[in-house]
Length: 249
Image (tube, rainbow, N blue to C red; front, side, top):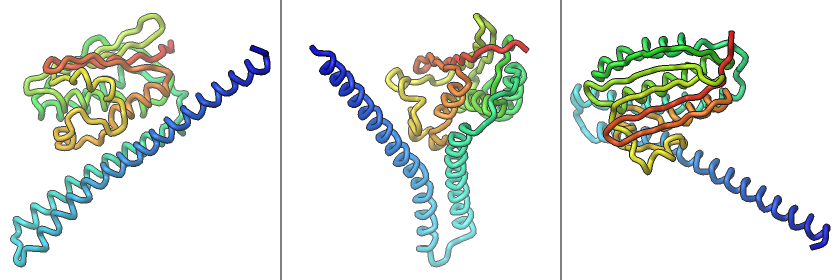
């Protein structure tokens, strides 16, 4: 093959590869927009149906009004959750990532804030050895671990446990959030970080999830040059391990 033909072949391959990546990006954007619209349309349809049922009743009772208001309230809360998470995803692009963050402090605060929610769900949060520091955005890191622990509560069982631990090894922070809850099916593990993906659609919507919680977690961790792994067995529990660059104060 002549050098000219070889260059043309290489250029053609690179161009085709670029077109394929662009096509994938457009497809992902289209799917994201469609899923976002669906997540917002569902509670809107629920509210509209509730109001229409109330209108059909010529003499609605006080209980009918109360029931409709409750449906509208829950649907509104769900839409607010979706919109807030969408804003968080877009906002993280403009955040300051130059702050010193004490991971031990963050994890203790997350556990403290979610303690009442855990008790209400009859779940116990246990803290192991906590250590580690990272340079980044404290608010976003807090949100990432808040989402992980909140998920561990939501998808647990009565009498369940959540164990939180962090350690420093080979210039990396390792943060583990382990629960003995319902676990994640094997075929769902590779999809859980995708926007709006739900393992159990009925249960996720019933407990108020937006479908963006883990997407936001992964986005935050990767923006801090870290990564997140998950091991789970259905019916036995789930362990999320976050790796972040260690920063000595």
